[in-house]
Length: 263
Image (tube, rainbow, N blue to C red):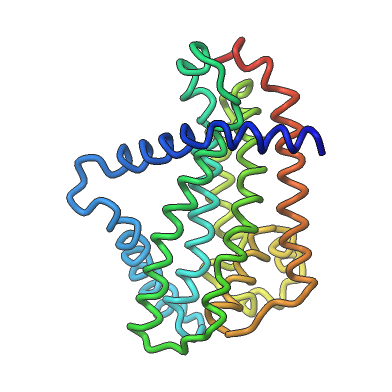
């Protein structure tokens, strides 16, 4: 508990640096872009149009309001992909700053996760727009959608801490993780409904071993079905988040003193 308290005290002390880093990343990402932050909304909408044309017409997945179904899955997946991928390079990218002044090193992967979280909040506008465009039912449970987002934020911070530490020593991890992210698209029900693989027990097991499945399902229940997930679903989501955060903090603490030798 004392160690955890120390993390929070350091975070409070360096919160202004964290805010500046997030602001810098936003400016860098949309620098010289005419539409700027609008791309956070436009990009998922354009991808939704392509995916919907392919999977709802060519492959004919019978999913009600497929564009919304896809957006609810891709929004969380893109958050995971962006936060963990950018966290992986956060330590090597901040090498010059780390060598000059003392800064708690976990600030850098944490900042990448928070920056991706901000982008996800903008992407939620696309989800809401499609609900109104398709005249889908609007459930009051939509107001609870930040809950699975926050669960997933904690989960992504944990994964980001692990990847940021390991990638300092194993640079090939950057390339391997790109392949993993591609496979992850098909290991979670982002494009297809679970009913499409119900007859294959092995695939169902693989999907349900993927933590993203539970966060996406939780989010869809709130947005599309108007139901509140029960205690079991909440405990599963919280469990994955807490376990990976604890593991991430432990791995990062074990490795951080050696970063300076490899950055």
